[in-house]
Length: 531
Image (cartoon, rainbow, N blue to C red; front, side, top):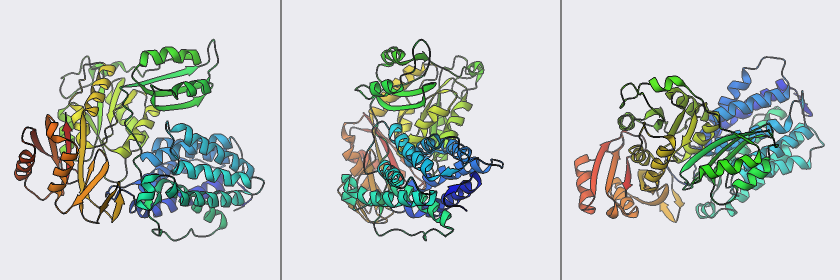
């Protein structure tokens, strides 16, 4: 294999080898998150993203051009993007493919340009970029590559790897949560693993043995509920005026907008924005190009059978809930939602979510991700679905179930998105699981095997008794002021449901308490605290 320039065939082999290396490294990354929850999944989700991308790439027939290989690989990653880190990686690969362009062979200078475009794409895909994450590591890799862009592909990748590893070591000094836990960023380490795999493949060597490094890695929560009620989507195309991509980006960086995703170029620009004033945004967007609002109008949607509504005639919107157990399947089904599987470790791919949403039939579908690390793939699915897909960013199964109560299939998409947003805002989430490792996070020291409590995704404490952990979490979530507390019992809970309800009722006398069989894996108890 040449190390000066790569043919499409050689590039495909190197990428496959690097992807296999990331798969072999995934469990080591999963095991060492800053939050010691047992479903920490950074490595597994990044590896699953690249495996699906490889499936697309390996289906190509010879002869292969290097640009064709990268474009196909990136497109596969777009559909396979899982979790926050996997989605960001997929966006960076799209940038890489666009930066490299339609080349027969991949030379060092072209690769350097591609890595620069990859870093830029990753930053622009995130509405609020944070340093000390994989974004920083991607940018450092591009800087290293540029310094040796006049040399061969191997030299460029070696330089990129060196700078990426240095940046990864420094992430601990860039985020307070990382400093507190004494760790570096897991997503950034995933980038380093891929680069190590590529360098080893080009050298004709085996990559370094997979091992947990001396310094543990961290997975930070990848999404913050932005508080906006309307998911607004449109496409800008050239008309009387050219499409002003940068003008629109600057406009949506201002106050009043959240979860901004802008994909495309001057020929067609797909836009997804959260705002409380959608009509105003659409009016303003028309100044940046010709505004179109494509919908996948499936007339058979009026005849889709809906559980609660007989024939489904008049159905305006569908609800898709990610669910991890038969118990929650039943809960969401009783509330009018269709379910898609939410695995304990590897989260659903963006393409899978889009396909499941399209299969429901209505032209508008709302998805409840029900896990912080499933939200990014759901948001990426917005760009892939034929239907108009709206994301209600639920961070847990219990919070998602509380929001689903507000769903009405016969109301408009706007009315439903507003209702679900209000329900999410009024519902706090409490989760009790077992610590997968000794850790300090959010100022809390926990021991491996201890019952740990998370309130709205933040670690609040640990104890030997999961019920005590739940009670402490409910107190932190101000359950004494709530109207209702719904607790879902997981498959690992060994106590009595009746005794559990009695202890909650004794602690919060004026609150209505409901205990439901959820059957969810890993989390012994999850609760929704509704105002």
